[in-house]
Length: 219
Image (cartoon, rainbow, N blue to C red; front, side, top):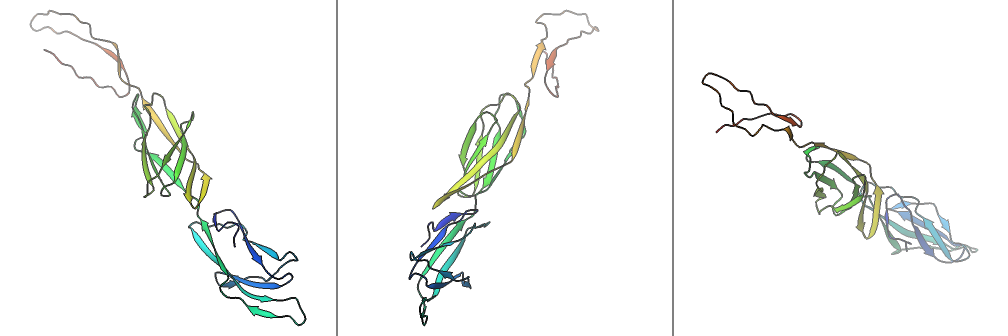
């Protein structure tokens, strides 16, 4: 049996074999013969799987095929029905983007996350961390709090549970630029001006903000 029958990519586990001390055991992984192992005096041998790396969840069948005793003459026996399955889960992934990277002061940004279905993503605004869970299709949209200053959102980590919890750290940023709200700094004077026919009158107003345009009304 495996110490852990389900592991995450980038980790390892062990397969325990119990048998006659000093016996030589043959086994396969996925039908491919592996180097024979000798059971120690304790009667227990652990096959180290080594670090397993996958990009998609993968299963491997370890099967014992033969045992030879350490006797004179040696006795050999075919082994059937002795197998164990190791499942290696791929690490979860996630990326994100903004619906718009430039918004008005005092409004919220919308962050769109894409990644491993049902994974939990941790991200930061530079001050605190937040978490959000992707849906069954691997998508999630998050509306931030109202922003009043340029803000950089950064991915921190992602994790998902599939029998075991697998996680990894992430990189990636989204920069949100805040456009200041328009402000009238010198309003039109509230007064009545009388002019004669054919004469003109100049009105002025001062305002701050990006890309200003003006529209005048009368009456």
